[in-house]
Amino acid sequence: MTTDRQKVRVIACGMIAREILDVCRMNGLDHVSLTCLPADYHHHPEKIAPETDKAIRKAREEGFEHVFIGYADCGTGGMLDKVCAEHGVERIAGPHCFSFYIGNDAFDAAGDDWMTTFFVTDFLARHFETFLVRPLGLDRHPELMDMYFGAYDRLLYLAQTDDAELTEKAMAAAGFLGLAFERQFTAYGDLTSALQQADRLVKTPQS
View 1 (cartoon, one colour):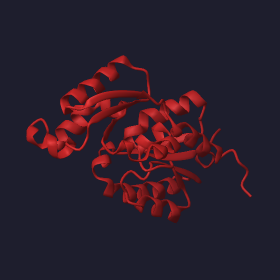
View 2: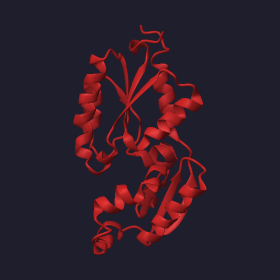
View 3: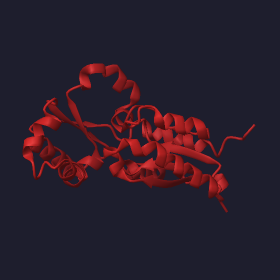
View 4: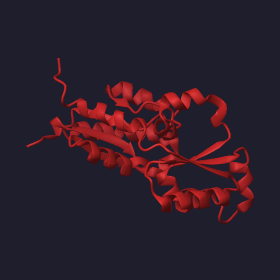
């Protein structure tokens, strides 16, 4: 029987829950116990660090010795790293999910090439209207379009899966925003190696 002390509690962004479960399933990462914070923290990054702190404390109370954070920095301005350091846990490397899906090294190498790129993932393609259009008020106030998206010239769809329906949704999103459309199949990028590293926490003898 596997106890909580023999598992890794992954505390992750709800935007990547499906992808984490897919990676775990495909790689036999049965030591991972996933809990997610609300996806809409993407719009409120100031909530990520304090809510992650609470989730870590709860995981410890539930008996999890090993905890891994399924977030990059994600707009916290280093505050998430402070929480991780306080609890002695690690997070996914990188500034945000777009970076680790592309691969952090490749993302960094491109530098300023990303400045005018608006990124969409499988999650954002699937939930474009409910997660972006409505919360930003674009359905009610189209005049806000230029304020939010005027600095972009292309929408780059980072595809985790080869799904024709999601590609059509992402293309429609680009049309709605008036941006050129491009697609790059990334699969799960650095997310896979990050979760594999987290899984090894319970398989490496402690000194």
